[in-house]
Image 1 (tube, one colour):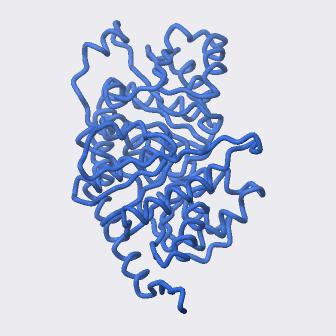
Image 2 (cartoon, rainbow, N blue to C red):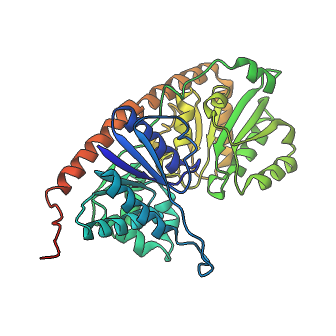
Image 3 (tube, one colour):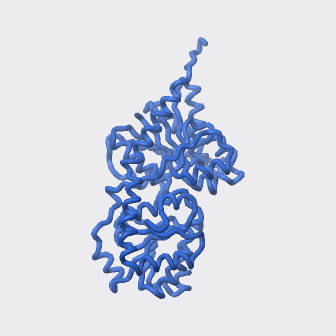
Length: 387
């Protein structure tokens, strides 16, 4: 099958999942065409089945804001026509779903039919999509998609409750590549960070307000009074400078390391004793799943789809959003009970295996076949000039 994948080429969850999905599809023989404004960071190797098409937007004095959506639709049309795509799969509704609808209508005018699948990832529904500036377009674009998927039951329910959706939404969860995300022997690195045998706690994200990183730092400051520990914060974003200041205010700056963006996140996870994910909104919790695959228990909030990944009392503990004291108690419980810690590490890995790429990829392939099969029951007629 020839598949076009449209996504944000960033370190965010939707871009990572879309890129890894495309790579996996290519590895089993599908021809995958990425259509984005720059090459996705994880698309960093050669494959005979992977192609990249850059969306360029011409700059004109007339435009205060460059019309990316129009340029994207045009590029979708171009790639579909010249590469004879069987399917377009867009990740994150804004603006990809509406651009795909426009491309589909242009292709229809040319007598070409290509089905569109939209995958909802989270903030395109729970945050940005609810804005009155976007809601009508988001609703329309979802309803006009030939297929719609969501990465969790929580996100599926949120979509139905927030928008007038007429389409059936299929839940296909995010996945983990267990060949990459697995515990590695990095004891010498941990010794450099924790020279006196301290416990190593960790968080990774894009440092936005929704991640509530201040909760993690407050938890760490209280835990450290009872359990010697260090904290690694991986990632970057608008909240970083404020969190650095908070560390200084709480007197823990010397024991907190901000590592910035890491391509080899699995190496850092291999050092951790515990992982934090304290978001106020989280459609799935991919960062937690990556930690669990590296045998790291998780302390999390109960936001969105996190509880579909982190099972309370088994793979870690779940607290109400913002309940720092409960997170402190749960953290100390794990760090001071070696038997519990060992069992949760094993449970975390076992749970991560339920989301393995080998299990989720066939779900996408079956869904593709279903949507393409349904779509071709009503092929578009190409009209000649005589008609």
